[in-house]
Amino acid sequence: MKRQKPIDPSKPWPNPRMEIYIQAVFKGSSQHKAYLKAFPKSIHWKSAVVDVRASELNRKVLVRIQWLQGQASDVSVISVLKRKQILSKIAEASVSDFMTCGADGVVVDVGPENIRSPALESVKSRFLLSGEGDGRQDAMITSVKTRNPIEAIGELNKMEHVYSDEKPTGPLIVLNMGPTPKPLPENLKKH
Image (cartoon, rainbow, N blue to C red; front, side, top):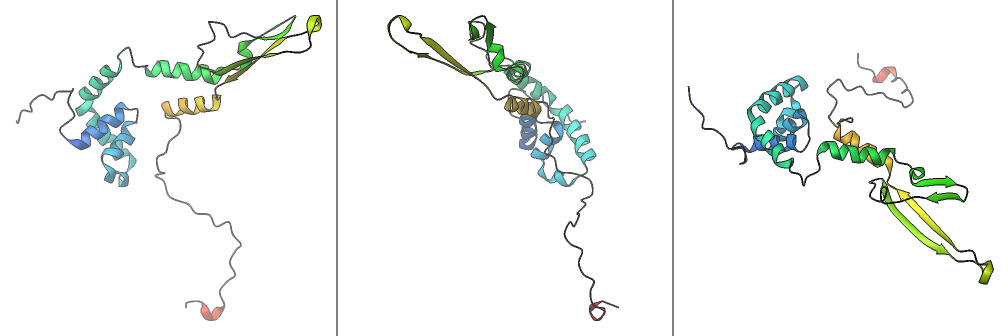
């Protein structure tokens, strides 16, 4: 039996198609999608065959994928879990989270514990001066804008692969919703 020399996981895989697969899985693609990207002709195969081949390939290249993941787990890189937590905070936040109601009315409360909230897009304050002398009533108007929760939910769904952009594998059914065509005259029908 032919012995293979060990492969250094820190170097790109010798087979370019396998390296394309490795990079795609590392970046978050499913094994199925990564295989289709690395081997484009497999798009014509049955989905189950692609899954089996992707699984077999994954076993061969797992050491490199794990090495890349280990490199990415450096403390300077935000983990997938941390990114999901941040997106969840954005999705769940409301402007009312940064307000306090009291006897004086509604007060915007963006203190040290809230100022770094990922849900905050902007906080703007301005003074409103009215009147002169003793009758003067100054007010500070603060506006708080939160990030779009729908975008955060969309990003979470992408990370969780909730939506699939794979082509349907079943039969294609075409419905003609137009008016029913008139029957052909007898002289034009094939006998």
